[in-house]
Length: 322
Image 1: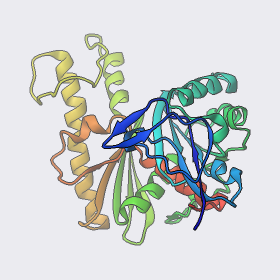
Image 2 (image 1 turned 180 degrees about the horizontal axis):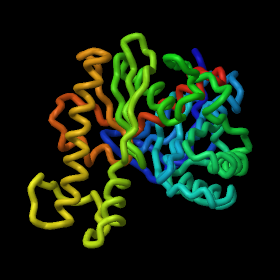
Image 3 (image 1 turned 135 degrees about the vertical axis):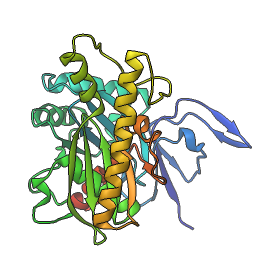
């Protein structure tokens, strides 16, 4: 009979559910004992045979960073490839490695993840000025050299007429994650500072896309260029396409207008890559727009780029699940 070793990150509370008891577990091992943790509080659990090295489970935990122009999305994948949590911090090229390390350390502590448990890191960014500070933060926190998605990185993505490093890292990660999770053909909308649309043909080849001013850029352009229009947040109650209130008119134009754009682009993209193409929407503002779309079956996936990062990490680090 095999003896198994269970490695767990600290769980902060006790749970009793239908006879399953989970006590507080200190960072380390429980030998030959099964620990039951409800799924909603499961942080990191690695099961390995007793004769496997302690560092095996540790090195399989990956910290992923998706850095955009406005926000930086953080995520931790455990040894089984499960995403333990996601968090967002503001993107600021002027911040130092120490400052980012401090913010990230606080977030890890908030979610009960020990820095010593992270054995690898990967970074994707469309802001070149962030590479140095985020890489330095990863080295400070985890003592590892992060993998940077870019030139020389094997992404496992076929791109028509170009190399993957010749297109944006965000597009690469979205495409890799999308193909892995949903197959091809595929249309991917990423609602960030800019709204990008990517097309993956039936053979899994990235054939191109479009770039559109983002929701926030459009609203800021209105308020900065028109004297009587003030700053407006896209957040709020559901809007109607017809309104008398100026702020609601701006929100409606931005959100419903973006949804109409999305419906129209889906139709035209499917003309090129096939009517059976799945449509995925990701990014911080995706949920605000998709609710107004008339196209059926749009998949909203907030973690798509993180999943793509994780796939790229595995491909480049020779990673495999235990």
